[in-house]
Length: 73
Image 1 (cartoon, rainbow, N blue to C red):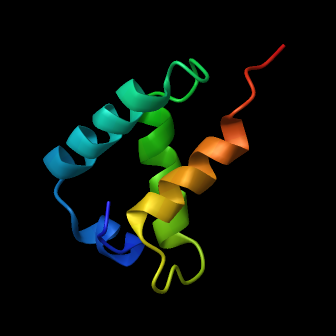
Image 2 (image 1 turned 90 degrees about the horizontal axis):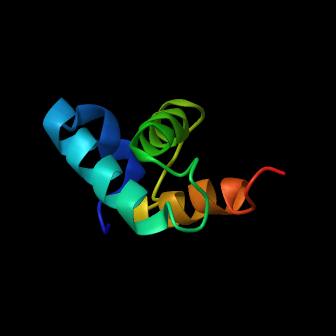
């Protein structure tokens, strides 16, 4: 969680899947759409669009959750 988002593109596929799976398990109770696939997609976009600079994974996860925190009606 303390790693910078800018390191995400260099992480192995296994590391990305492991991290996204843990986040999905932690947040899926808020919204079923907050699953492994969502976190992989959201973190890929966060890391690869623009300049993530010094943003840490913890902050990126919070952003990803805040975008989807309300379940669809």
